[in-house]
Length: 89
Image (cartoon, rainbow, N blue to C red; front, side):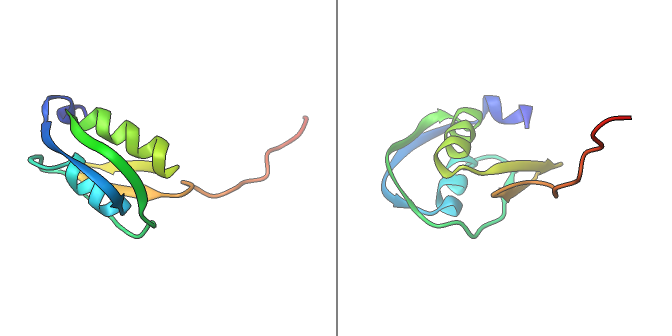
């Protein structure tokens, strides 16, 4: 994902954006792709930053977690599964 720091995205989006549309805009011009399926949120002036900054904004706004495998980004509402922690010895 470090390669996205140098991927600048020009242009902005305003209005109702699905997570897929926001990710596609944030990753525009890069080799990265993503999964889809989370409802739209209102955005204003989304863009005109590097991809990493836009992904940080997406994580905060859409309350998602990202898992990166090479150039594929998987999006989760909550990654992993719950496990019972050992409490004591």
